Length: 351
Image (cartoon, rainbow, N blue to C red; front, top):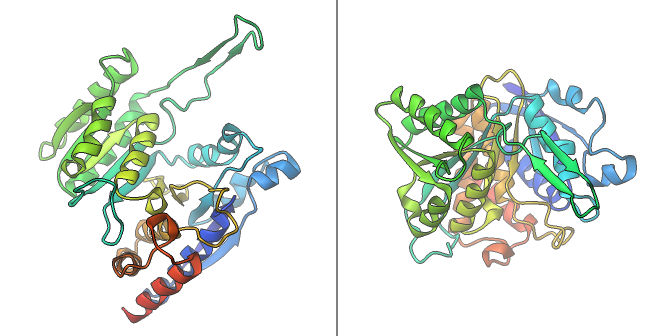
């Protein structure tokens, strides 16, 4: 038996409702493949912020540094500004643990209707740079409250940071469709985006078997809707990757099924896995949250830990339930969270 210790951070809203189903599927898949999990749960959340003035304790990173992986539910709640919850929890973990790849697979699944007339064949991955770019801490506000008030936010792109995430994207493409599309805006953003383009071209030369395309972000957003099946691996900066992956998830039918992995490819630090959906305060506590994104994220964690067969079994069960017509309300179905989870567990046990 192979054992792992997982840090669970349910977070806010439906985060606490989707992590138990993901955990149940993990344990079931693990039993089939000789893998065991021990869990430590951390109450880091907006509720903690309102009670104690911080999303997590001062030594929070130290507390989870020794875990094999982190599984997160959702973060955000009314009354706590989004930049407070994000910069108080997610971004410190991503940056301290060098999780510079944000990996977001997008696939049109049987049983999940796409809003597009024809979305067959959509199976792509967004590789988002995750620790620098437009989401920097450099900048500030001047003259607050006056008519001359101004705000400055600096985007930070480094040769090392861009090269390593683009290299990851090209290596990934070699195991898929051998096609990388780089998201840029070098016609309008005069310094950082030409720099990005130059570094992408350098990496592309080292991967001659991969077809390379460059698309300006505005045109790329349109093409993701008009012809999503043409894409394989899309690589983009922190901001561009963030926006494109949510758009692509909507093309695939629902942000509720979309997973994400925050990866340290060196494996020096634990990687973190989370569904793309937010905390959904409007449905929190009703028991109707879609657990697919969390389950898929758990499968990505299994794969990252070196158990692709277990991950494949877990996903086959979840996707099979969707194909059978069992789904939650966000997908037009009638199953609640518990019913969908039972169906997935039954299918996994019978596989």
